[in-house]
Length: 127
Length: 154
Image 1 (cartoon, each protein chain N blue to C red):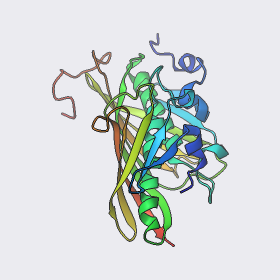
Image 2: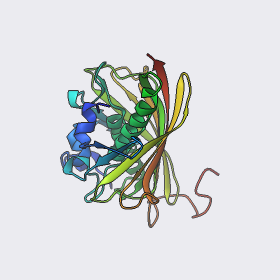
Image 3: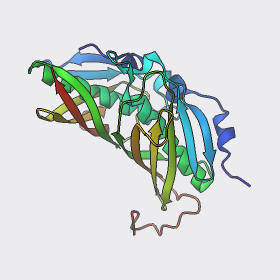
Image 4: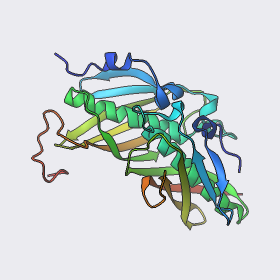
């Protein structure tokens, strides 16, 4: 999967889990800062959205691909994002014919202690 | 006498994520704030269509709704976004500046409720609808009416 230009602004890159599932990695840098020493909520949201789309793209690729259009997103912020690397992963909870439900989680040191989670719905236009 | 001078606050210049996205103050009133997100090709989320990614729009609405709370309570209080919900009503038109407008609906002791709309030229044809809530980690919002319990509706 080729990430969009916006992902380069965030400096997001893809790591692959053993099963090929994408995990996104975002370093802490000046362009994602909100209040000093913390990630801006929008940068975290952007990372979650890229993670959700990467997971959905990965799932769709096994079914012949398709275009993805965002319908809505709800982001919950659990902890302040500190000045360290952030990872995010999307989980496609249901891949329907026209709509997909996707969850995403972002964490720093400990996967079990997320800094933010999100639920997104996407419209799918099958190729 | 205003305790929170939004124009002056924004004169500190643009920094961090909001600065990188080019987000700036567009207009404001006593109980509303408008910010502007200029179109830029490096904020594209879908290269085939040139449409802006949703992340920058969420970032702008997070900032705009937060500022609307400070405008409402007439003070700068460090708070954290508790949650933000966005409906993408239609795709932003490539090339157009996106305007985000937000207002604060209510402030309790430690929670504030906001809503906002984003459009790219015509407020009657919005591209996104947002609701966001904020929380104070400690203390109380100035002038809040909450009693410290039942923080939500009621």
